[in-house]
Image (cartoon, rainbow, N blue to C red; front, side, top):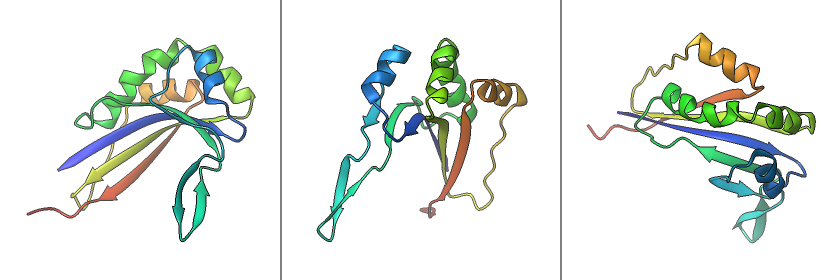
Length: 135
C-alpha cells in the first residue's frame, strides 16, 4: 500500500506568515513564525528556527502528480507575488512524502508539470518513508 502527501511551503528567516497571506491573498493551512516553540525534550525548548507558511494537497489517496496539479492553479495566478517573495530571500518548495510498504517505490512526474513548477521558481523535495506491511 502507498499513500502520498504534498505540501507547498514558503519558508525562511524573519518570515511573517501574515504578510505572506496578505501578499498572496490566500490563507495557509498551517503557519509558524520563526523561533516558535514546538516542544520540549529533556527540559530544553525546541523551536522551528525558520518560519513557514503552507498549503496542503487535499487527498493522501491521490498520486503526487495529481496533488501538485491541484495546487498549481492557485499558485499560477500569483506568479508575480511568488517572484517577489523569492526576491525577499524566502524559499519555496513542494514537500512530498511517499509512505509505502513497497521495497522499490518510484515516482514519475511529467516534464510539462516540472517545467511549470520550475517556471514558478518552486523546488520539489520527495521523501520516501518505508512502512512495515501488516501482511
